[in-house]
Image 1 (cartoon, one colour):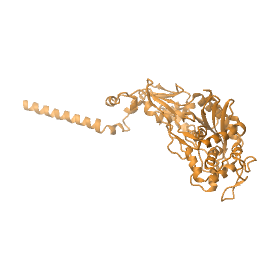
Image 2: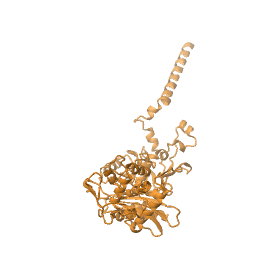
Image 3: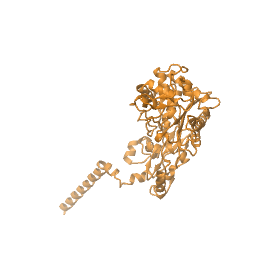
Image 4: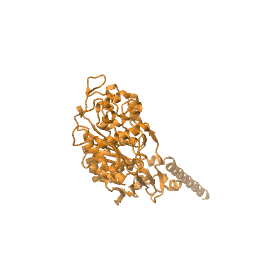
Length: 485
């Protein structure tokens, strides 16, 4: 009898050991396989089992969470959703995340190990931290001014602080309410289908994900390249520029919308946006130096993150002289996001230095303890400081007596550049109205804001003045909002 008891005990011990070995195999060696299995809903259920952290603007939350009392318990909510959609993006139980909701998902969802004071303990217990908060660099008044200024028109606005690179406003219209996509029911499915079928593309972030021909606003880059290269040394000297200008190696002629551009000095050519002068200047500077200057401003940079990705702005580096002439006035293959053109204006205002733009000031735990901060941002020299000083002078002239007078702010120093970008087959499309600018208050030691505005459906004539008529008032409102803050 004792022998049978021993055998039974040994057998039970073997079964127990086999059970422990199998549990170890599953929980340690195969845990990743099971965790990543699409049929495993535990992570999804846990993800939505607590409120998501908040995205804040000016210290106030523009996102929240709603208890749906379903298996995926908490759904994302948005305050002023269309206003901040290009910044927050959406957090959907069905369609994933975009923009800050995506790039800062680990903080917001509570899965970032930095949120736990004892990360090893959390790994052992598989405890989940409360979602942290993301504090943005946005200026609430500037964001609202940009959104109101665009109104019902299609376009975008980007504003940054020149000395730091802090993004102060990022607006794209038409917009949408991200909250419509938060759940996983039929309402979210209908909203998703409707938004994707909308020809106006409300979910497209035109401020950072759409590139446009920058038109005459690119003449800021061309003028800087000409001054840096020594092609122009005197702002008031004749430039030996014919009107019309025959593109090199072709019989095609380039003309201006107005008169007075024959041999116009750089000052008046910039003030009245003479295409012929800047096309010839680009050719005189040459592909190498034009490309180097454009790239110093940020063109052709595929690594820009704010922290979500920004579509690269492009300047073709393999051009013949005729193509270079057109590229130098912001046409041909030259393309730019509004954020990139805001960086161009900021470089002029900041002594020739370009600061990398960023949108997140800091992240915190639920209780407010700081997890990470933006820190200092690297700078690169886009042009000589002496060139930047002369570019400031040229941009100020545009606002005081040129095509950008609608951007003038009493008591402040404002520099700007208007632009109208042709596009479509045979340039048949309604021209895009552009305006880039910067502003410095009378008591400020440095420029406080640089802005770029593009309006796709501007209701103006095809001349350069459309940038001053449609886009400049929007830029003025944004600059006033920042200076008033």
